[in-house]
Amino acid sequence: MISVHSCSAKAVCAASNRRPIGSRGAQGQTLEDVQVLYLTLAAGPKNWTAINGGWPIMVETGCLGGIGVSGGTRKQDAEIAEAALGALGAVNTK
Image (cartoon, rainbow, N blue to C red; front, side, top):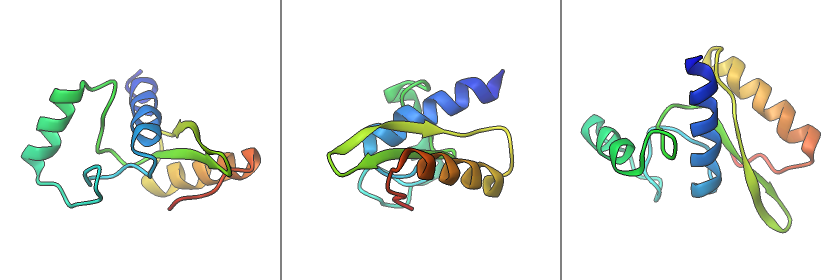
């Protein structure tokens, strides 16, 4: 069940920031653990996460939304997301 909530948060966060999700801030800066916790609590765990596995769906017209993948290893999540982005004809912003 955690994977369902996690992948939704990853998709929302990736679309909002228009970049892949990881432990970096909105400007791409490295975040300390306390900053990650602060941002998660401030935005709400449904809206922001630093857990890898979220990618924006970018096409020529801009960001259409986000995709969140959870439940596997980081590598597996990335491979699934890249395949989904390719199937949608979206740009991989990795």
